[in-house]
Length: 78
Image (tube, rainbow, N blue to C red):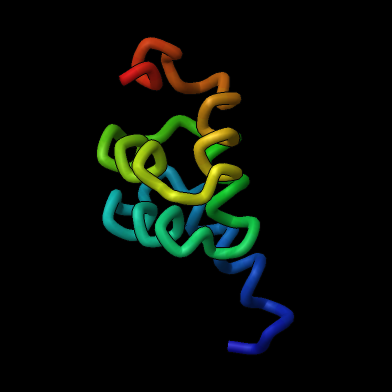
């Protein structure tokens, strides 16, 4: 895959409602550039992905998740 298509391809996966949780967790875990970050702040996520993002050592990922209006705030408070 060419470098010019890599970012749009990752974004497409990140915002695909049919993408499996294990793939989304990998995007969060690697912070896949901005795709993982945008995914955490802009869409509803399955519980395993939320758990992975909450455990992520990168503060930007956790902060993005905290601002996500699609996720119940009670779910974010451990």
